[in-house]
Image (tube, rainbow, N blue to C red; front, side):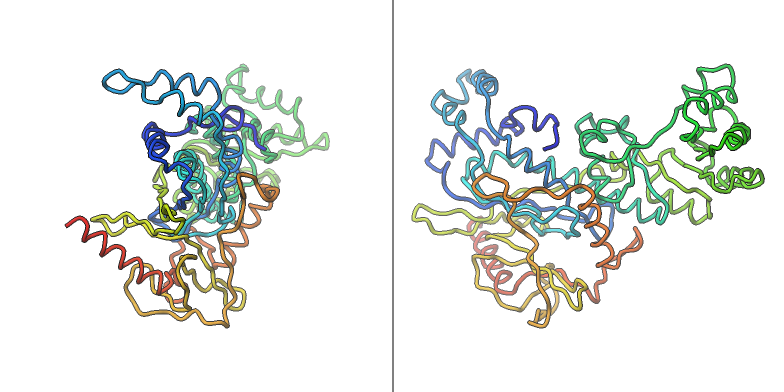
Length: 488
């Protein structure tokens, strides 16, 4: 288990106040233990792209495994008052919370899987009260890591075949956010991180040499480089832009010649400011003229898939990319916008009732039932996804999720895979987690299967289909019409 603020202490209060007031009302009205189904999904692809990579599941399972209210949590809840000064939560309810753990089931799409809007990434089936209370924590963990994993994959696609290092610790949204970002970035394709904390906690390779402060600590740049080479003769990547970048490259070459004479090599030079396209060409020319053909040029400075693609269009001879701020903050879209919605609830007789939310905005309608995503393959290649309801009789007919277009017959010649798989039963994790390296490899297999070789990839609308099963679609429309009738 990864140690973090979500596993080192109780996590019952990782929620919003309205969740707990609803929980008390459920308990007061005798609904607390009624079996419910919730789904976590998102409404639109981030970054105006065509794919997302789900991520954060193991963090979510760690969160759930430690989910409870400790005595300090309960003492805090005792202090909360309503507008009239009365306690929000009485002692008998707090006694109930003191014994509460998550005891339900979880199905989830494996991390590193390509997913699409409105598909459930996680399905929660358990007691209504507990399933309600875990919403905020699950959304926090899955939303952020899915967003960052997707961003990392886009950046790595832009940089390919050259490696990407994640440098985001100092710019991330909090220390715990930095750890989550590093984890998601590695699954998305980054080769290593600058963060020693992530290296220790997650086993991710770490990389780094020195900063501008090292150079400024000496009387001149050449002395700084020589001193670093004395200490780390086999780890010299010199940051050359403290004063004059090209002069810095010349100083690196001088020290590189001394290293070579003693059986070592100048590993690289790093550019962190200025016109990276022009400077990288000039630096490469200087290095090659001095016979340092193997010395790599490392670039950093607010990089993302857009700037990397632009630099590569200039044929910038950059061999390693250090990406930080724009990756870990997802600066062009800092939120995924995932949602967590109730979709089924057993009634007093124990029968399942479909639940949905109707909205004036079509994209905010929720989907009812106990949902599953079936992925179809033709000759080993993904052909389409069909969202269906396990509580509704299924057919092989599917309709585009927009509801516009003709039915598509998912015939028996296609291979199938249900993406939501059991990860927790009765509150216990059912299988050991895959390693981060295995998840990274899954990401790469997924991108290859879908034929995604560019961050600018667009949906293969003529050949790939994101659909809903016909009976499920028809039932959803009936329920939406009925919901509209109740509001008229």
